[in-house]
Image (tube, rainbow, N blue to C red; front, side, top):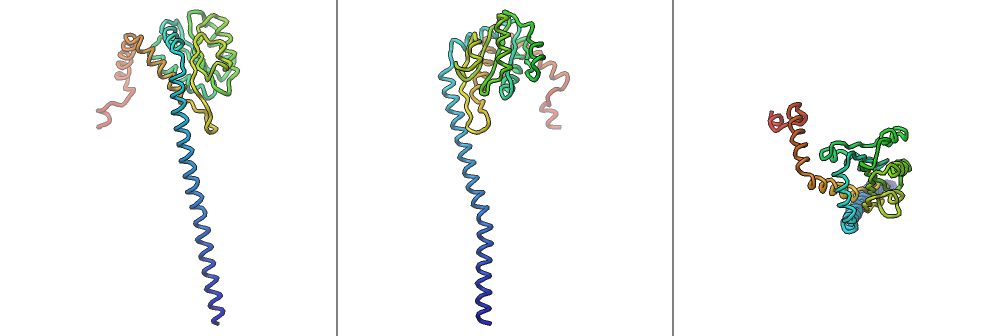
Amino acid sequence: PVGWCIGTALSMVFYVTAIRKALAEPLAVAEAEGQAAEVRAEAEFAADAEMLKRTREGVSREDFFGSVAAINKAHKIYVLGSRSSASLASFAAFYLNYLCDNVVLIDTSSTSEMFEQMFRISEQDVCIAISFPRYSNQTINALSFAKSRGATIISITDGEMSPIAQYATYLLVAESSMVSFVDSLVAPLSLINALIAACAKENDGHVCENLGELEKIWDKYHVYRTDKEEQE
C-alpha cells in the first residue's frame, strides 16, 4: 500500500508537470511570436521612414516643378496605374479632380477599354503613369501609345532603369521595396501628395472656386453629416 501510494503520488506529479508544460509551451510560442511581430513592425516603420527620406532627398526638383507646370496647363490629365499602383492612381485622380476640370482615371482592368479611354490623347494633354515592381505591361503599352501621340508624360516609378522611365518627359523617382510580401507604397504616396499640394498652391484661385462650389452642393444634398446632425 505504501509503495502504491508513493507510485500514485509520483504519477500525479508527473501528470501535473506535463499539463503545466503543455499549457506553458503555447504561451511561450505566442509570446515569442508577439515579439517577432513587434520586431517586424518596427522594421517596417524604419524602412518606410528611410524610403521617405531618400525620396525627398533624391527627387529631381526640375522634374518635380516641371510636372506641376505641365499639370496646371494641361487640357486633359490622364492618370494610369495597374495592380498595386492602381490605388495610387485612384488617389491622385481623386484629388486632381478638385484642381482640374478634365481628369480621367484610366481603367486598366481591360486592355481594350484602356485604349478606348486614351485614344483621344494629344500633345495638349498630360499622362501621369505610376508603376513599381513588378512592372505592368499594360502601363508600358499605354505609355508607348501616349508618347506616340505627343502627350507630356509624368512617370512616377522607382528609378531610371524602370521600363516607364524611357517615356518620361518628367521622371519622378520614389523609393519602394518589399520588407514583407506587401509592396511598400509610402514614399510614392507621399510624393504624389506633394505633387498635388504644389499644383494646388500654383492654382489656388481656381481650387478655392471649385471647393466653394462643391461645398454648396454638399450642403444642399446633405452629402456629409454636420455637427448639428451629430448632436441630434
